[in-house]
Length: 476
Image 1 (spheres, rainbow, N blue to C red):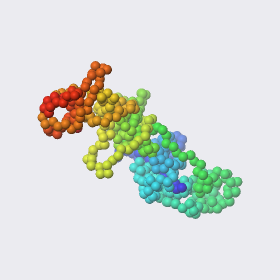
Image 2 (tube, rainbow, N blue to C red):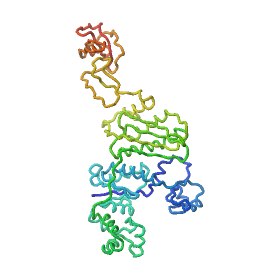
Image 3 (cartoon, rainbow, N blue to C red):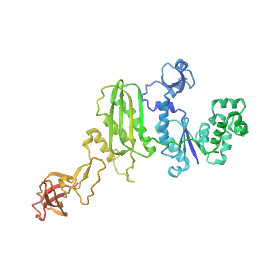
Image 4 (cartoon, rainbow, N blue to C red):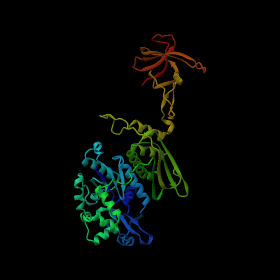
């Protein structure tokens, strides 16, 4: 097996940065942690680092170095949710994903059959992470912990031969072995600074002095025992929330966080190879019940742009009566998704929308009843042969004969010349049970102008070419 390890050294800070509204005048961002009286810098963005702020500094020192910056307390739960989202993304590339502290490991040897050899596969992973806004380090090795150690030591390292694993790990500084801090200090006092020196020590002595957990960790590192960590399984629902540092008082300001949430939803759906047909946006207000906006789609979707357009169009129809403190997106129903087929040589104009996205845009702007789907009924009478589908899983009625796309509300005399019969007759004789009894022979006709009409005459009678036809519809 080969494992790729993605180390996320700035996961907590990147989580904040990718949710921050784009603003060139925004002050530097500093992530802080620790008790109230002894707050220290956990991480800082480039602007803050340029001002002299560095991780580990007390917050008071940071204030002395930089007059103005945004100090945000580390939200452990938010970081964990982002870690889970990245695990869902990685599930798109491998069925075996492990969540390591500050990192992800995914088995990629079998996935290379689908995504290509490692250099190209590695580029796909890096491109996705860069697009999502996560800085990272990446390495490949026969075990997850070995890949983690290599990623820490040398970004981009790739070790594919299990026989070379021990020799390559032996060269690494001990700090990359992911040992507890107290063991690092103990081995430093013993003069053990590299993994090779540690692996050369007698196992019996290590067990007696440091316990069995150290030997198990070394065995995991070398792949000498089965991986005991539980594999990641994607959840059955999506739930994400963005809290604002200020009150949002207009809908336009919600576009950026909404795009981020729908983008995360699309990433989550791609990982589990599913779609979404209904999700709920909640707009939180101080001391008031949240405003709920339900987005229902005609068919499952998972394309980020389509989800964003549908949600934004629905939001534009509401009146924002109170400021918004947070925005939440929840999707409980995640049906299977089958991507639509595309022509190899797509001749659509550059800005043309796929039909499904156009339908959703019209529904979002004009209302759910503005766009609907027709389905056939068992009644053969043209006036009753179709109805608006309620998408409740009703069995479709097969039709074998063509029907016009434009059915007239009432038949009218067809007065034209040069008619030519293309098909027919098709006899429709029904409706005796409800007083709407009819007996007609329907024909498909072509006019002298090339239009195709659907017309009928009384059953058993054939009108002449100039009169007697009753027009009931037009074909497109």
